[in-house]
Amino acid sequence: MSLLSRLFGSGSGSEKGAAPEHEPVEYEGFAIHPEPIREGSQWRIAARIERDVDGEVKTHHLVRADVMADGDAAAAESIRKAKRLIDERGEGVFDRPR
Image 1 (tube, rainbow, N blue to C red):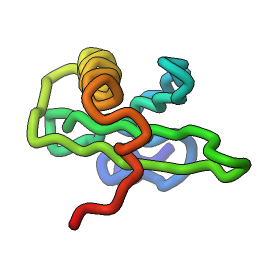
Image 2 (cartoon, one colour):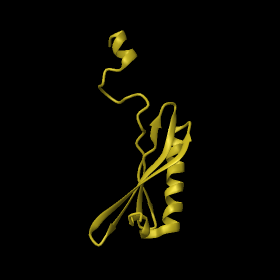
Image 3 (tube, one colour):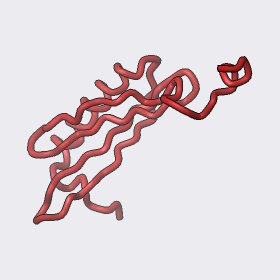
């Protein structure tokens, strides 16, 4: 690999700093997919919440203002925040805001 490719990235393979893959977590009939978002040297709390409702997969994207220095810690916090949202709103999490 050339020096320039190492400095600026070659665009192939996994990118340094890309979001680590995390297994979805089942909670109260919902699937929580932690998807922290890389922002500079930090990770924003984010997750995708899914549930099959009457044969249709409903999805809610959770994104919070909170950021953390570690991607794995951000994923764990994303799961915790998603569980809290599910506890508070249940299937209402899929309702559109008014």
